[in-house]
Length: 317
Image (cartoon, rainbow, N blue to C red; front, side):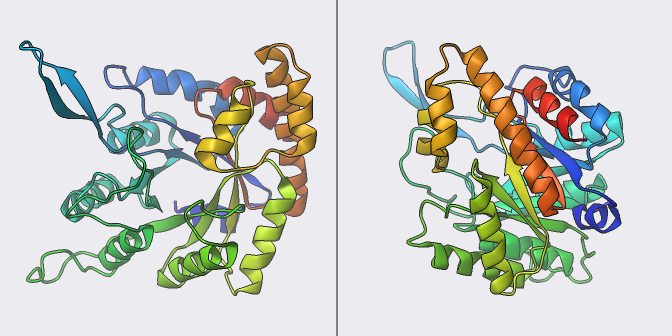
């Protein structure tokens, strides 16, 4: 089922989770071990992130360094198929611009369609860890809107080969990202909202947000969307705080603010275990308030902390 169909048929706020593919060399069992504690909550779907390759320098036998390309977390398409088979739950693979050509993207979409996966989340993706600015693949997309356009074209039976006639129409439900605190590269919030509206007008079916820790910023974001005529479902993305170092890492990497009340409580913590308790309680309160607000789905970025997310979900269902 499509994400939008899950939402349309739901009688209450749905739950969904997001996971990382395992590091290369690990088995699918690591995914099952991660998800098993969460499946009691009957999530509507599971998101699986996509990761671009990275350039690294490896020392050769002669002492010289060679630039090599390594993809540390491959397997998104296969993981989605495995999750659907193992748990009988829908999977939502991410699609990103960085590191992929248009042809590679088309082939991935064909694979997904053959597997019966009819949901995708379209993202530009970030710059590699060792690079400052995002650079698209020479034969790929520079913006999420361009990637979105390719998926929409395939939904209309239009493929990259101009002379291909009678191409089968795919049937993807397409999600896009929204930023309650503005995408860090956008000059201002109004411009960022304009880009989001354009993606919805192009064919995006729903929006899932970047993580946030202040619900009022989400409420304001939803209000701005509705004022601009954006009517698709808007799904909040939530992440637990579990360590003190995240106070610096999350604002730097994800460009989100931590409320003063939350940061003050964390500063008083002496151990990460205490931070996890504070973070769990904050996540529970966030979830309860968002559920009361009437969000269609509570989407949790589990990212290695399924036990914390489990505690939060247990407290609100």
